[in-house]
Image (cartoon, rainbow, N blue to C red):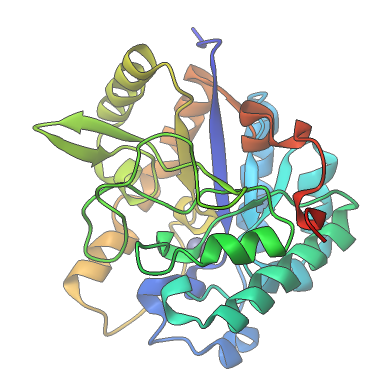
Length: 289
Ligand SMILES: [Zn+2]
């Protein structure tokens, strides 16, 4: 039976060739020459959500929104939250303050023009907020965002701030950070928010982790997934390391079936709804001006 407490479903809308693990293989200048799969995969996710009465936040890449405006309009029209994943899927750690400001500013404006709704949230590619680039929150505030969901408080070779708080917290600006979900085990934070781990763990473990999280933490659980993760027929990228191969292609065939179970077992809503970001008062971007 479906649990009534609502958790946050989040989708990072990008194509398979835009992931950070393949950044050396596909130059952004060549993205337009590759047959896209993101549109169809995202429509499929929207169908699955609709069939199972779920709502989600779609952190959408501006590059995708520019090419598939009708997709973004459908996301919004069906009551989901359209949020921002930046324009070009560059890690925050690889950007200067100015390029980051342009990237997140352009994406926000584009998405707002398409939907007619204010974009409240941002998720950094590859959870690339670190202790060394905390200025990102100043920029997000300047650009009119309300929240970020860009920190994974785990030890990982490519991302994460191991000592970061595990639950919603204030950055040094008015921007709230909502970290991805973890479980305490053997004195460490174990990532349980989805993505590659959803493909790695058997569904029963994901279920156990979510149930434990919900009963212990009394905080909303956050799940994330990419459209390419339900696409087992995507072209295989050659000459990649064994680790990247494993991480990107593991269990793709099982994801859709697992996702349907997840949508049936739990209630899902948007970040804005669960955390009330859509009900925040004065527009902080104008504060003090
Ligand atoms: Zn991404």
